[in-house]
Amino acid sequence: MLLENATEKLGLPFAARRIFTEDGAEILSEDNIPSEGDVYISMGETFKDPFYATKRNILIRNNAAWNLTGVVLPENGHKKTTKTCLSKRMRALCENKKVRILVYKNGQSTNACEVVADLKNIQDFFNCCTIKLDLHSCAKIAFDLDGNEISDLADISVLDENIIHQGKTPLLGPLWISTGEGFSPSGTQSFLTAAKNALKSKLTMAQHHKQNIDCALNNQKEKVTDVAVLSMSAEELYEASEKADRDVDRYKESLVHIKKRLHSLREDVSKEEKEGLKYHMSHIQELSADDRLVGTRGCRLRFMEHLHTYFNIREALRGIDSNNSREKLMQKLLDELSSTKFSENVSRNLISVATKLYDKNGCEITDVLSLEQEQARQIENNVEQPEISVWLSFGEPYISPF
Image (cartoon, rainbow, N blue to C red; front, side, top):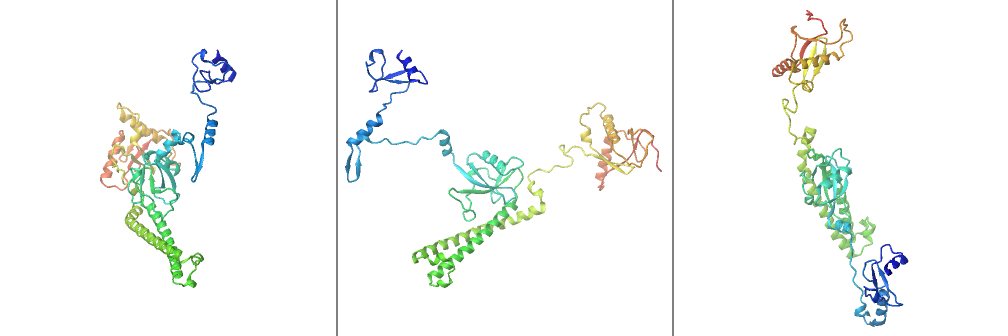
């Protein structure tokens, strides 16, 4: 009854389950309930002294002492060391090592994007590249500066700080993202050329700054053009001179490295310019004309009314069973010719439905596959534009025009 009344009076969100005295002892029977005393109601949690913080502060204040180093707290009054408590999501983010990677579209050196990726998940990296670079299909291959395919993100080298400022975290790359086509060296060449020009300007500025410092150290202040150099002390000038020497050496070393890479790419770039799109698709196997994936060759028919038309035998054979296939194929050809628009200056007294085909000698053609064989013989004889000359009849018999 006490627990039920306490739940209602205190407005607890859950039912009261345990009772404690002022000193934290749990009351397990009605005989232990103190008369005219205070009790604490719990919904299941352990006892918490509401006056613990006040008691601790009083203990520290009464027992603290001063010495030469400051306040000495009593042993019972030391504060507990705090522990950082991270959520599962934050702990997972901290454990996963994320890196910044600079990416370009394959064959381009502009509109760069920075992708934050997990080194252990290359598929998520490709998904981010597809969205950020706005590719027409999913990204599948990544190439480095030398055109090597990257299969593990841990193999990506750190970008030279002399080319692009790194910032607080290192920047990896650059990488060129492909949707399946081969590596295009023109994008890498453009990137390296722009980096070379930027380094040349930085080297010129560093050398000019070094000359100003040398003039200041040699007491030739009239030749110094930088006001900041004139305000430096002798010790600061020596430090600035050493730093300028390191910058000049670093820029020169990076320039030599870039020139070597440009020289190695020169042959591939010229080959790409000559071959064009075929250079990127060299990894795809070329199919021969008689391959089963290509299908049978279509027939080019030349009518005596100076009309040319093409008939796709492979498409026409679709949906035709083996029974009477030749007759049905011939009927399909005649139906297609019936819907063909002929010369307007030719007048017909009969219905415009093609019924028969004749060759140039006046023999009726009853098998479409024989036309294919005739065209194949022309190809073997190296005819420049193989075609078959036929006469089309709309019901009338063959009449020699000669």
